[in-house]
Image (cartoon, rainbow, N blue to C red; front, side):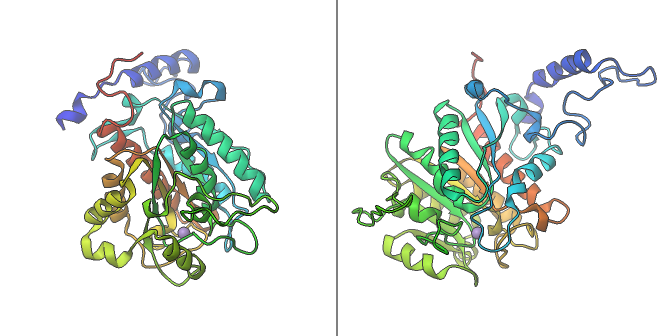
Length: 374
Ligand SMILES: [Mn+2]
């Protein structure tokens, strides 16, 4: 309570001044004269333009003015079962309007303590996985090298590879990956293409690189600083799609924590084990969160639902533990609004993003708490 009540409200006050100036004076019967005629700030939460947490960066040449950016990758052409994740970023933006950045549990106010924006969506090429990968890598690389923490919203999980490819080459050292999912997603191809079942095959490598492909566009051999031993895959299980990837995960030596492992150790201890394996010998860790890791009873709006996954509270506890050690970037993928109910799935995706960002602020990894503003 002490921490929460001590947070300044200067940005909120600045917003009120701005909305009164641009949104004009309210009608006479409105007693609170901080209310404007046209909504130009956070309230009402259901009004206004649909951006993540009500901030928008139109000029991507100026993305470096911010500390963190939500960016949509509305691509679902690499989905192997139900599509629809191209609508994920818009759904997450819409439900994010419910929140104004004040996080009771973490003692954080994102709005006051972080310069956050919505960078809009990457121009993906529907139906062309490879061109989309190139667009995504270039876009994420632009955000990351501008010194901005990327909060990437899918889209399907094929994006894991181009997302990490936009970050890892800029890190001087090895990069660990914590991958929370019901699916192992490390087979080489699926139906002859690099579908959403394949991202970690292309992101990690075989050690001695022997699988070079010199035909077509599939010439990647993995990112040299992404070692499979630092790829920790949490929550994998169920009856769908894991056979081809499991053989490769075993051969490469990735680390898998099953739902049973999480039950045995508890979510916090499981996350600590994951951190140890992901960070070993690494300079940075990337978080890939597939929303289907959460039980479809809570998160039905996804392409490949698999019962028996994490409860929301377990998932949040795990990401609090993981984010407390710092991250170089994050993605939340596989939110498919056409299959959602009451925006529940989009809201959980939004919470994963906000809870990670809030934890990064609380632990001093992100934002400008206690820092003099430049
Ligand atoms: Mn999955």
